[in-house]
Image (tube, rainbow, N blue to C red):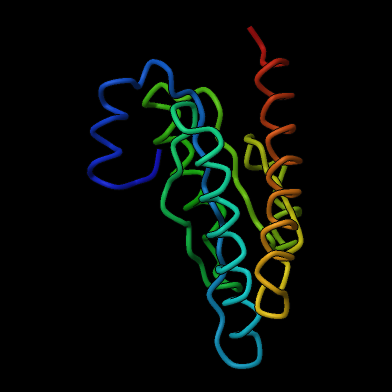
Length: 153
């Protein structure tokens, strides 16, 4: 389910079945990195929506967590988001990013960080891009399934 009024109504009616939240992590950059951050945003948005579509009814797709790359308190802000989600009876919080900097904070986050390199979609034909996104979705769904099956009881 996506973070829209209509789908949040559905979530409210069936939240006992939704045990997972996906939060895309998207950097904001200006200057020389602006196009790269835009490319990451495009890739993560499309990938997140495809994951949500495949797992509708089990996953709640949160709005993207935007941050400035050199922001000092981004980790604390993200931890606050995750704590808020967990306090509302969500068992699994997954962060999806193409920003390798988050790997440095993976242990601190105490949730599932999925790092995947961004694909520059603008340089691909539509069918190529769709195929690559679908391959990534399959791999990420395998990560979700593994974590669901191996959760601490």
